[in-house]
Image 1 (tube, rainbow, N blue to C red):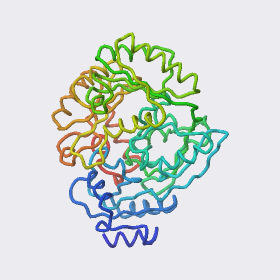
Image 2 (image 1 turned 45 degrees about the horizontal axis):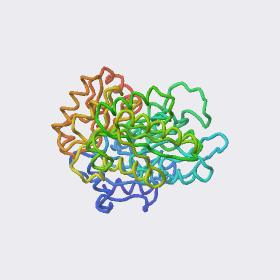
Image 3 (image 1 turned 30 degrees about the vertical axis):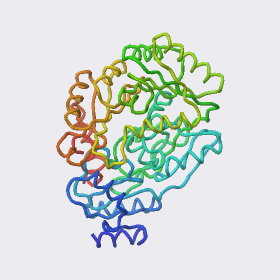
Image 4 (image 1 turned 90 degrees about the horizontal axis):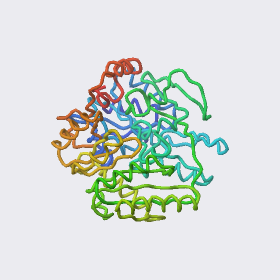
Length: 426
């Protein structure tokens, strides 16, 4: 390992390579949540795109297995990686490349923190419309690699819908680009969509370009709570109404009671627009709730920000918990029935995507079977290593696995990038 570290130090410098025994304890624990078997790798921190390309080139030449990450906030998501030789972190690649204020686009290096980017954009009253799990520590590259959109998909769709351009380092060390810096562009092979949610198995993301949105004048969240039937009816009315929420999530009774929001199931709906519109839409939804016998409350300013932060924290631990957090997908109309099963969870009312949290793997298997009966899915995001070793993390039973393996072969024929982390052990 010291020989590998010495080779990498010649590319990035000695201060940018860290041996396993010198890695900070918290960082080491997050890494151990992502791997199978013993670990004795080193971390390398390239500071430029060119250094990243040289590191991957050297890995390809020596057939080293590489695990890519940013700040490692979501490194424990997905399948367990195997036989890792080096860990490549892009967190020191954090430059703002271009911010076209008039065009509402921004290009940044993959290692820039999401929170830092939002601070930069706020100076021009703009923002990136994503709601990642760990907004303070998540990097832009990690958000793209895991497709971590969050509840803002209600209004702004997913990560891949907001991505305009991407630059990646291929498994052979070559730099490739797709898309551009304009909202409309024509491309052949859509690398943006292919790399979004690929978990670092196809290449290392080095730069990304996003579309942006103007900041809102006012924001407020209406929370309705009550019986499953009434909450389901409220969600149906909201979906078919002229109201335009930016976030709208169904909440399980365990989540509602844990946050002291009321009793029964919940519906959290966020409106962001000019002040008059926010007040009018909030009032209309409260009136819908009253007619259905639901309790209603409005959260604004710091209380509102705290509410959405607590919802994320209730679903995702810091990596030390024994709980199991899963991503699910189901028909939106079946969301209330799924959340009535007795587990802590949250489901977006328009997409049917959401999260469920379990205390043991029995509940995971039961819910996976149930969701498959609805035509949905359940994939394990974070869980203890021994649980991931026993269960199929992705639970994929479709017919596209052969295509996925063919894409992996095309992009990474030596299988050196995050082996085992994706569907089917890819």
